Amino acid sequence: MKPPYVRGTDSGKRSGNRNAETRTGGNSPRNKPVGKVAPVRGSCAPGRAKASKAEPERLQKVLAEAGIGSRREIERWIEQGRIRVDGLVAVLGVRVTPQQKIQVDDRLVTLQRKVLLSRVVLLNKSAGTICTRDDPEGRPTVFGGLPSIPRGRWVVIGRLDAMTTGLLLFTDDGDLAHRLMHPSSVLDREYAVRVDGKLTDEEIATLTTGVVIGGQSMRFTDIRHFDGRGRNQWYHVVLMEGKQHEVKLLFGAVERVVSRLKRVRFGPVILPSRLTEGMSEELSQTDVNQIRRLVGLEPGPTTAGDGRRKSVLLPYLPLEERLNAAINT
Image 1: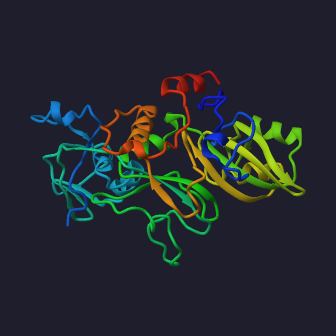
Image 2 (image 1 turned 180 degrees about the horizontal axis):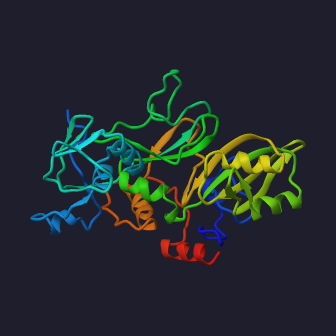
Image 3 (image 1 turned 45 degrees about the horizontal axis):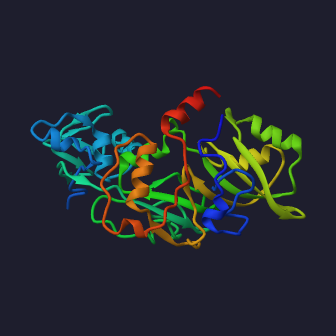
């Protein structure tokens, strides 16, 4: 499958980063209500055209758009019987309108039509932080340093292991989070990896052709040597989905040990060199709107002063072209 990013982009020049963990060799880029509103995102807001009669929508979609959680998370809550609609325990597939009474853990969610901006935050995750909201062991979490949010809550997009560092995205828009994480959006992920020794041509062929691990077929769509001395060799690898521990499992299949792992790109979003470990920044609305377009969502309005924020996006193929490339692979 051809890579969905645009070949020939010099991501090293764009970011100005000289660190082996955050640059890429060759042509590969770096790469007591719970919630008060169920927002209609984007400039073409259905609420304006259908204010008199709202069409019923799936419960998990409505709550995700309200920033209550991601669709998958809300689906688990429905299965656990934690959500009620008009006093009755909700079931998967139920559709609701803003006029209905919805409760999450017996707390009321008031649904109203309102146009809101989607917010996206990029974090350079530190080693040792975990991707959960609360940890019984008291370990630091990735949510600790995020900006405050007036409604809903931040949803993490694509978790990382505790010791994996690098690019991590968050949004307050559950529908956007769902699109970014779903395989149908065909968004690849790029990692900088340090392994014990330089790979042979045969090992590279195995890793890009694919291996079956635990009943699942896994492979890198791209792998490039970047730098290294002696036993410590750096590679940049690209995955299409990013299954749990996939990078380490793949290298383990050719008897290589991963000693450092850092995500440097998620789809079109790169980790900028200005963002030091543990720091976060909010994406410009221009970048957010471009991300929305790339996953098939309507863009929203821009905000004053938006141009002062530097873009963190690489040129990227439109969704239709990515889907066609995936079909023809």
